[in-house]
Every structure is written in C-alpha cells, then in structure tokens.
Length: 105
Image (cartoon, rainbow, N blue to C red; front, side):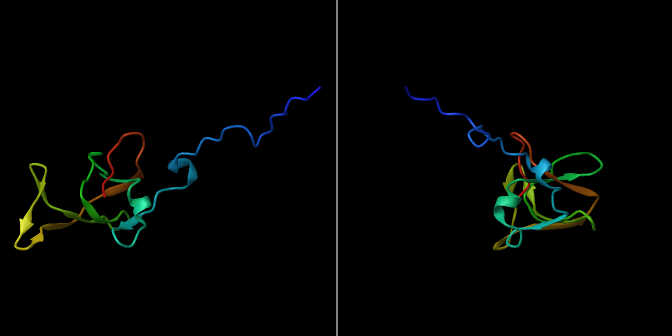
C-alpha cells in the first residue's frame, strides 16, 4: 500500500509581497541610473493634489526637483531636434505603483 505524500510548507503557494511591503520606495529615481524594473513600478505624484506626474526622467522627493518631458494633447513636444524638457521644483511624492495604476517613467 502506497502512502500519500505529505504537504509541507514548501509546497504551499507563496504570494509575492507588494512592493510597499518589501521596502519603502526610493526618494530619488532617474532614467539610465535607476534600474528600469524599479522605474516601471514607481509613480511620481504632486504632493498637494495627488495628481500623477507623467513622462518623468528624473525625480528627487527630498529636493522636489522633477525633470520630465513636455506633453501637449497626449503628445511629446519637440523643440528643434529634441524633445522639450520641463525642469521644475515642487512638492512631490514617489510611490510604488499598485494594481493597474500608470507609472511615471
């Protein structure tokens, strides 16, 4: 007579922790410096309104510095042979993206 296999804790499905449970989001992120898998999970939001800041290239929550592409009617804005950049200082938060929220990078 064969015995039934015994289930162990190693056999139980493991759910991945959400990024928020893993660690706090970084306070600084920059395309080309911060790994893209991290940038893809980040949202940069205006601290006062909670609005998403899109097309971010660089964000520093401690200084409030944001560098992003200019966007008009959903399209990037050209300035000569380059995309127009906006550099601004404002109160921001860098958060982990959850669910189907858009990322900022």
